[in-house]
Image (cartoon, rainbow, N blue to C red; front, side):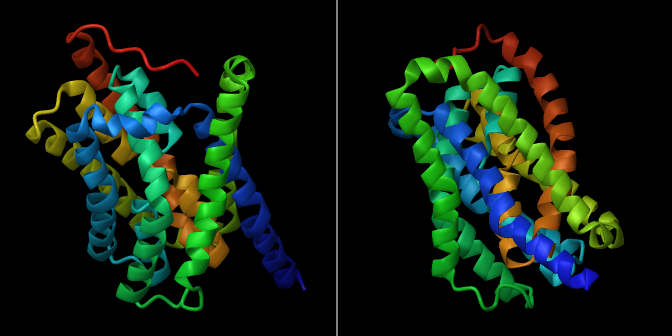
Length: 301
């Protein structure tokens, strides 16, 4: 009876709580966006192209590699790929700002990768299930996942942008509060995901943590080197690296938990470490970027 109640509670969390939490975070992101953020690709196409190449291809492929190298069980391997395929998040924008990086580029990559997630997340999820022969999600059609990602990402994102366009004064007054609320929601989601699967987390913590840390460091390092190789400046390289280090883990948790709760574990564990490495990187880049002169101010919320 207790097991049935636990299953019912997990289903309730996966079906209602996590999507609602993600919606709050995506509305928060929408409140920070304007149409120019999507058109900015024309202004600096090289920076956006390098960043999106890393986000949409390099990061998911690195997740496949780390799952193989660390020998993760099939469901956890799929969960790691799901994380690697997730777009950048609002926390990446904040840390880019703290590191005096190119915030405009960071926001643009977050916006565009969030749109692309409707295709990339279901695609890489399907490839991972097949590659690792996982016994999860095999009965879930890609169209269902696409619709799910659309409803929990793009709809609230569009709502946030609509609110900003229609009520700019209200947005200016309440954006900071809304962003702090979104941060609190993110922390709660991570804790909830870990607690709900604490036995599996503890059983596989060493390999999950090792794979998550390796993915984080490899993605940020490769992104930074790729940006410098493309002759982007330090601020742009900072923004691109942050986008690769700070994923929208809530999306990975929300999508994964609706299929099988195990899929949410890698994203939850990754979230426990990503701010440490990103914070150290932000500290290192702050002084370096400061020496290059005043950072361009992002548009007002």
